[in-house]
Length: 220
Image 1 (spheres, helix red, strand yellow):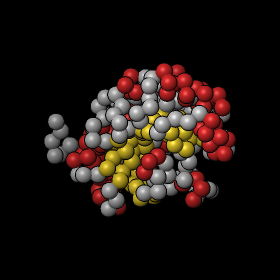
Image 2 (cartoon, one colour; image 1 turned 60 degrees about the vertical axis):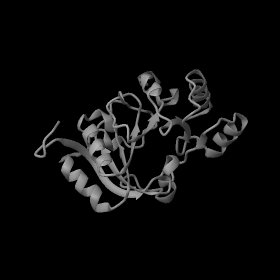
Image 3 (cartoon, one colour; image 1 turned 135 degrees about the horizontal axis):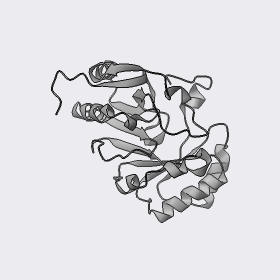
């Protein structure tokens, strides 16, 4: 256990407050902690700037920023937030302070150390990402009912892949987020496919922030 004088740090790409753009909390004010670094290179990635850009900050400084926003909902994202070991300590401390904590993870990092009070949004990589072989499948077996599963879909082949994974791994208990790659797959087409193949707990997952701030890349 670390003492009060601990100087553990994270490489932080950006800290900001906005509305949550995705998932079941979409539309709610949220403080975002975007961490630097990701071992994946998804073809449709929209945050490539987070692969390398960032500044080292102490956990105390990050917590001070979060407290200053006075928003109950906090999301860790990236990059891939769970690639930095100190992120698990930050998650625990945020939960200790009573925040509702959501972790957006690409699914290739073992989620075992994540504080059970936090909610996972686990991204299952489809073939269109070029990263489907990086999925860490044991993570799916560890999901709780409050966790969410996201499939970012580039085309019909990705949709069919998602259906197969959902069936093979019996993923019908969790919320299933079907997210069309922005500007590539029209949401209308995905809606038609979803209506033709109704699934319990399936939701269309649009990135609302890209409609509110269509020209912005960061801090939204």
